[in-house]
Image (cartoon, rainbow, N blue to C red; front, top):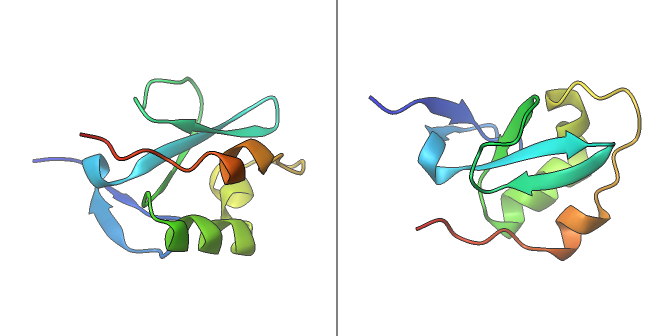
Length: 84
Protein backbone atom coordinates (compact mmCIF):
# COMPACT_ATOMS: atom_id res chain seq x y z
CA UNK A 1 0.00 0.00 0.00
CA UNK A 2 1.43 3.37 -1.04
CA UNK A 3 1.94 6.09 1.59
CA UNK A 4 -0.65 8.88 1.69
CA UNK A 5 0.22 12.56 2.26
CA UNK A 6 -1.83 15.75 2.61
CA UNK A 7 -1.45 18.57 0.09
CA UNK A 8 -0.70 21.86 1.88
CA UNK A 9 -2.53 23.74 -0.89
CA UNK A 10 -5.95 22.09 -1.05
CA UNK A 11 -5.66 20.03 2.18
CA UNK A 12 -6.80 16.80 0.50
CA UNK A 13 -5.09 13.47 0.96
CA UNK A 14 -3.41 11.83 -2.03
CA UNK A 15 -0.86 9.09 -2.74
CA UNK A 16 2.71 10.25 -2.30
CA UNK A 17 3.43 9.64 -5.99
CA UNK A 18 0.79 12.22 -6.99
CA UNK A 19 2.35 15.00 -4.89
CA UNK A 20 5.51 17.10 -5.09
CA UNK A 21 7.75 17.31 -2.03
CA UNK A 22 9.05 20.77 -1.08
CA UNK A 23 11.80 21.48 1.46
CA UNK A 24 13.51 24.52 2.94
CA UNK A 25 17.24 24.87 2.37
CA UNK A 26 18.78 27.93 4.02
CA UNK A 27 15.30 29.54 4.18
CA UNK A 28 14.79 29.05 0.43
CA UNK A 29 11.84 26.95 -0.75
CA UNK A 30 13.11 24.18 -3.05
CA UNK A 31 11.22 21.53 -5.04
CA UNK A 32 12.42 18.04 -4.18
CA UNK A 33 11.20 16.15 -7.25
CA UNK A 34 13.03 12.93 -6.31
CA UNK A 35 11.95 13.21 -2.62
CA UNK A 36 15.48 12.56 -1.36
CA UNK A 37 16.63 15.89 0.13
CA UNK A 38 17.23 15.90 3.88
CA UNK A 39 14.96 17.60 6.35
CA UNK A 40 11.28 18.07 6.87
CA UNK A 41 9.19 18.16 3.73
CA UNK A 42 5.82 19.58 2.74
CA UNK A 43 3.69 18.00 0.02
CA UNK A 44 1.69 19.81 -2.67
CA UNK A 45 -0.14 18.80 -5.84
CA UNK A 46 1.95 19.85 -8.88
CA UNK A 47 -0.84 22.15 -10.11
CA UNK A 48 -0.80 25.95 -10.25
CA UNK A 49 -3.97 26.10 -8.13
CA UNK A 50 -2.58 24.12 -5.21
CA UNK A 51 0.81 25.81 -5.40
CA UNK A 52 -0.76 29.30 -5.40
CA UNK A 53 -3.13 28.39 -2.56
CA UNK A 54 -0.25 27.14 -0.42
CA UNK A 55 1.80 30.28 -1.10
CA UNK A 56 -1.18 32.57 -0.45
CA UNK A 57 -1.98 30.83 2.85
CA UNK A 58 1.72 30.69 3.82
CA UNK A 59 1.23 26.98 4.42
CA UNK A 60 4.81 26.01 3.57
CA UNK A 61 6.26 27.84 6.55
CA UNK A 62 3.86 26.12 8.94
CA UNK A 63 4.27 22.67 7.38
CA UNK A 64 8.05 22.93 7.37
CA UNK A 65 8.06 24.46 10.88
CA UNK A 66 10.22 27.37 9.76
CA UNK A 67 10.16 30.43 12.02
CA UNK A 68 11.78 32.81 9.52
CA UNK A 69 10.33 34.14 6.26
CA UNK A 70 10.84 31.70 3.38
CA UNK A 71 12.22 32.89 0.05
CA UNK A 72 9.65 31.54 -2.42
CA UNK A 73 10.87 33.33 -5.56
CA UNK A 74 12.71 30.31 -6.97
CA UNK A 75 9.71 28.06 -6.32
CA UNK A 76 7.27 30.54 -7.88
CA UNK A 77 9.37 31.01 -11.04
CA UNK A 78 10.09 27.33 -11.72
CA UNK A 79 6.87 25.38 -12.18
CA UNK A 80 7.13 21.79 -10.98
CA UNK A 81 7.55 19.21 -13.72
CA UNK A 82 5.24 16.23 -13.87
CA UNK A 83 6.77 13.03 -12.59
CA UNK A 84 6.62 10.11 -14.91
